[in-house]
Length: 360
Image (cartoon, rainbow, N blue to C red; front, side, top):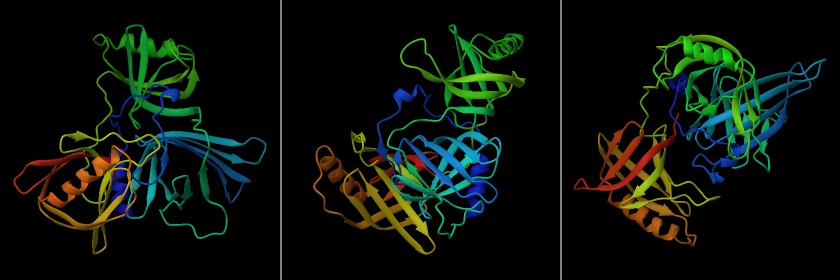
């Protein structure tokens, strides 16, 4: 499994389109995500270190599978800090998340609960120790400001505003007009691109809070040094196939009903979990959990019979849940197109639409 994860992560070390990050104040409502983490969240702790006093961690996780992290090696005359930005992936079989940044091997964390993650070793194996290797979720979501980053992305100047779309995370930030901003603007002018066309570039800098032209302060890219530029370059979109099994499929709609997650509630999802010789599914709309076996052969897919927990569900979850039970019982086949999954009944009618949310 570790080799498979590495191959997928390598393919994912490129630009992934996600919603642009507006401001920290605009962060989504807290959600209990399908992998079992309450997000967005800042996870804090000081972990053991073989040759220093400890390694302080500040890990910010967003539901869109992006993360920021600062690690500080404590002790000595001057603590060493390392910041990074990247994407995280979920392994529902091992109940882990995997952080994939630009500079080093993936980092593996066990999901110990909605508000706790525990570090694994660099090979992805669980650390057997009485020492504390856990980070706990802070009461307040307080994203760390990142510095001394080497990042690649596309710079765009349009309507008197500059933006930078970072390749690895896919996030877009306004660019602060300070530091070496003018050098980046000159490079864009010298490239002689069409109006508003993006310039691919690598920069050294940070992602720091700065005043916004409108509204509250926002995270901006602050340029310390401009590296290479390429007028014909672009972030590369990953082409790795998303597996049907062992992927968290977010429930988009059931029949004609579009599902809207309840703030602070459980994210609606369907999971087809394949581990060794066992195949089991789990599904929820945010209240009770449906569980059972499934049969898969080419496009044919049947689910159930399903067992379920028996909590009373408030509206509209009670209605969503009745629809989910009907969909699970009627499903006979499926269609998958990349990140989109559709369940069909025996006559080929659409029962529900799903999208890949947390895949390996």
